[in-house]
Length: 522
Image 1 (cartoon, rainbow, N blue to C red):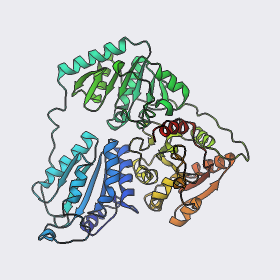
Image 2 (image 1 turned 135 degrees about the vertical axis):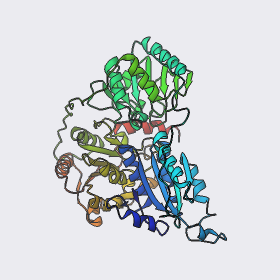
Image 3 (image 1 turned 60 degrees about the vertical axis):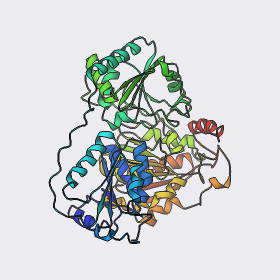
């Protein structure tokens, strides 16, 4: 559980103190929300705790991101006691009325409940957690401080919803239709989306690929839903933002495509530059599957994939493939560091044993061709909130202590949440943080130039000293960056920050293609 204590949560925080290590304090509530989000992406559910008003309303952005990107986060806020509300006083942290925050949270969560009665509390709490895990969405619980600690009954078992399983005839018809469409293909392909990871379907995807031999790509938001060492894995397909030209050509030319759990969003499709004929495509979401223009309501991606695996007689994998050899990068001594060289260096060195966390912007698009292991890549590739990557490392570390977080973040986004590095060492998290210093918002400059894209200049390499954790170094050449990264990766005992200076007008080829498209629309 991540959070910031406040007077409306103090009793709950005191009770949590009886379980050392369970509550992880952060510098800011939004950082706590992002940390819980990252933890949930890797472990299936995350929890964030904050005080009502000034704390809870700071969590709206991270909670909105969790809803947009299907992340099961439980948001808990301590609020004024029942007795304190009598007469509608002007209590501190209050906005419009005592229900303002509840109304706001209802708009960005799948379920919201006010826990004020000991008899209903177990049921409401159980329903909240069950909803978060079943729907892959955030939920909200608000608890008045004068009911914390009251005795109540045990948590009940929450039955699944009545429509959890589709009508068998509808499922059979859908499977027949899907197999008919794919069976007629000359150049079939599969695109894996974020729900494959969220719903734990990686093994079924692996089995389908083994049984069919279809090439598999993933979306930006679904990156690492496929193991990059799998022989059928081709890369990220996102139109103009695809991981490479060969991937784009292969999937642009496919005549039948099976899209599994992917959002057909602007960033996932490279601003809709993908070339997929909807009439010849199977698109399976969480609760509905489309075969061309035919809809099979209630047949979600889980039902479809389980059904296809059964029909094909495919078997789930019992081991991981051998790691692919990483491409080599040889730096040129004394040559100024470019975005291209930076990402080629990262690609040659990152993968197994790492959780790669890429910030929105060029950190994300430049990372499209990195080769993480399965579920080893985190990014907000749809909602695209800046400031996610650094606090996400605080959540990713405890979620997977066997993998070291490696953060790739631009200088503008780093400034938003950099202080969250200060709390990492006390929970045993020692990431590598690569700060791309190009003096501002590189994503926006190609769209529209102006001083508004410049950020205050800071000595990023000195941040570890300022927060009392780790060491930092500043580099501006290819060989300097390679040496700094190798040294950082070889030292898992502390946070290592690398300030990587690149020209202000230099961006990755993928971002250049994408921003050229964006510039036409601004």
